[in-house]
Length: 191
Image 1 (tube, rainbow, N blue to C red):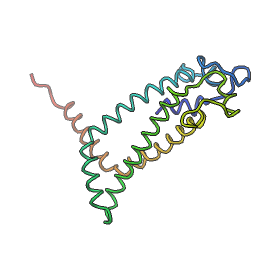
Image 2: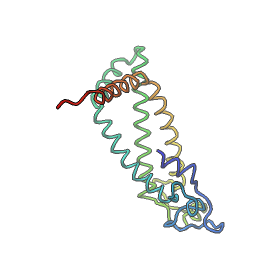
Image 3: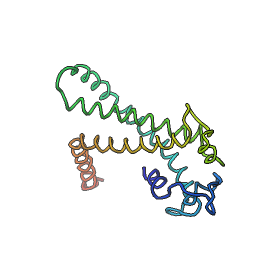
Image 4: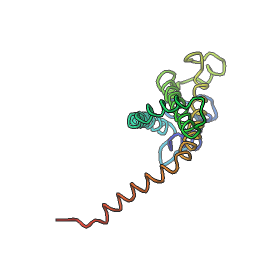
């Protein structure tokens, strides 16, 4: 997530070298990508970090889903049995998790589209503004980038809501983990 904020807010897209719209893809994207660095790395390096960190995050989220599969199945059955009844808490948690999952699937898909199917290339700006740019499912790259960015904002909002809704569980689990760590540290070694 840090790499995405660096790419989109600290090193935004800009003009090419010397004020031109053209910027070779191998040296970054726009003025910010060519000259400005964060922690010594230019924008194009942060884009690579973002891409590969996103692949790692996809693996982590898939593992999270696998580890919580029992909850998913049990809650789906409970929500089905609650239809027509007023059991709000479980339904809210379930809906938040389902919406988060759907948005994450779209975010992953749009990221792969941008990265692998319609990557940025030389002179894409001119093709884009003339309406003849490369497309995927009828949408040009700039539209995919905008969708990717705004879905990421929605995901962050839902993650915040998800954490707030599960705050008591987060606190309880954190206490257990910290007690386990402090117990392991404070035990004198036997031997």
